[in-house]
Amino acid sequence: MTQNLAWPSGAEMPLPEHNHHVLSFLSSRRSSVAATLTAPGPNDDQIDTILTIAARVPDHRKLVPFRFLIIERDAARRAGEAACRIAQQREPMLPEALQQFEKHRFLRAPTTVVVIFKPTEGHKTPVKEQLLTSGIAAYNLVLAANALGFGAQWITEWLAEDRAFADYLGLQTNEQITGFVHIGTCTQASLERSRPELADIVSRHK
Ligand SMILES: Cc1cc2nc3c(=O)[nH]c(=O)nc-3n(C[C@H](O)[C@H](O)[C@H](O)COP(=O)(O)O)c2cc1C
Image: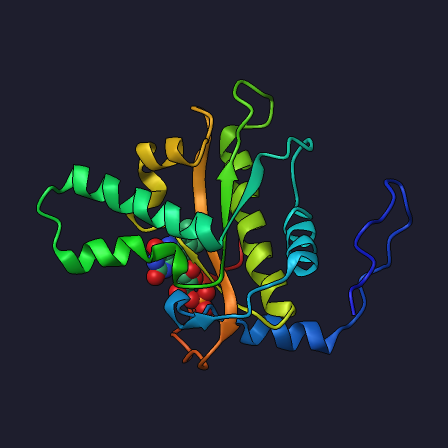
């Protein structure tokens, strides 16, 4: 079941060892389309596990340039209505089908975690590195959800770039949305998508 998640700072950590389960897991991991995810979503203990693992990322100078906002149930309905209102301000003639899509955007899957980029400006650690850390936190979140047996999809769409929606969620002016990670129980298997050929992306410096 749940592994040790809380290592005291300074504890001697296990050395890496060959782990075919992890290799198999990583080499077959696949995102799920959010709309195919259904209840049950992760319970509170599982969300804690997922977010504890998500936060365990390489982080230059320990700035913790990310935080997580959980959207579920009624809050998911309200967030969708806010997204729809904003979409209609941007596009007054927004077709009914798109209005419905926006209203249901956070009801596609039982749980959404908003990964929020929270940079420390003017720090020795470049903002670019901090952004990378928030991105790998989002990816670790997806992996942890998968490892608990849930499907997950990292989505941005137009909403992640929309300041009015960031304000609606209560983000500070220096914060941005790294992504919405939708999590739930898979109803269907994903099909493999093409992956880069190593020959196209790997070379050896001479
Ligand atoms: C920063 C970021 C934003 C993304 N935004 C979207 C999105 O808005 N819509 C979408 O369908 N996929 C989006 N994706 C891609 C999916 O999360 C997923 O990676 C993709 O469908 C490929 O599947 P895979 O993870 O199994 O390789 C995004 C990925 C990243 C890293």
